[in-house]
Length: 270
Image 1 (cartoon, rainbow, N blue to C red):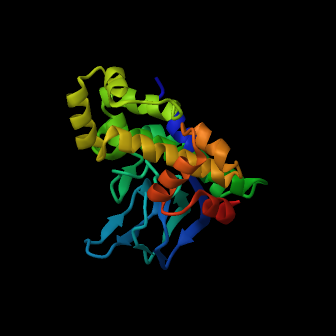
Image 2: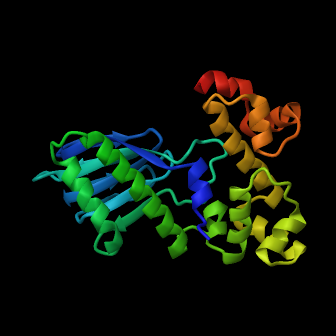
């Protein structure tokens, strides 16, 4: 069972590179999520309300959501960096970002499996090959998947959907919902998939994921619906794809969960 396949198919994390080079002054980062790769040198990371951290070894720094921070390169030699803005699949209803810590620090010396991708990132980031920008962006996309794998496998995240996917029983139910959003799932159905009693499943799911199984299913359906609407799919078609017989019923639920009507999304994103 691939617990990430359907999740990533609809909320694929992505990164877009905006800086490659030597930082010898100060840079402020304030908008959205970021993924930074410190190649060499030293820098000081500052965040409001937190003590400064001096970083002086190769590492990945992952800010999954908006968290203002500042880098100051060392006075001598600065710091060689590759930086990308991160999109985990949309702010509203996005399940991947739920439960992730504000900052994930991954020194390469402690996480050797990240090394090959980072080596390629350096070749592209500090080279001058044609197609360099696209190559760097795709490598960052891959690193994001590796990071999500890591936080789930290592237990760094204990709640939200990623916390649920770290639980073998809840992972079965979550994967079933992710793979078959159109199915008319009931609480009993999902408990059976998880191999748990109805009451135990409902309680454990809510304690771990942070919402009821049916509420999560609804939000997952609306996340998929938003993706389809952004691609210009008709409301009636989208409603059917996520398990609603009536476009009107779907539109009411979508507006309640996402805060805007389906047609507003279509006009704004298509």
